[in-house]
Image 1 (cartoon, rainbow, N blue to C red):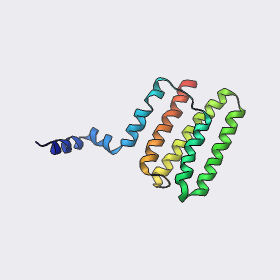
Image 2: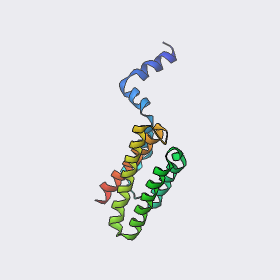
Image 3: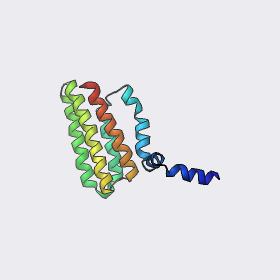
Image 4: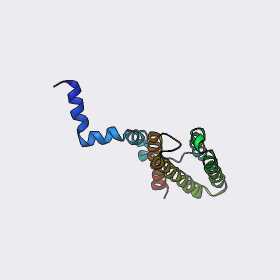
Length: 136
């Protein structure tokens, strides 16, 4: 058996095939593994920075991207103005909302590459869930 045919047989296995097909999810889970061990609340400006990437990629839908960025600016202002506990919940909500935003882009296959929306959506969801599990 040649190495090439051995690799082909390995890739045909369902678990291996799933990992190969969903590589952005696997990478997001590996990168976010530490959040499950030591949850932290990223600063609210991190949400703004992440959405700013969509402004760069979002040239196909600039108005929509700007409106959503405006919503994240409002969220950031609210986080600054409310109590720390409420601010943590708002940050978790923002990360969860961004995961949904990534899902919309993934389903529509628009604005960003599908691999990015898949990776970012899982990463954002892990951050949102770990914040909620730690601080609730």
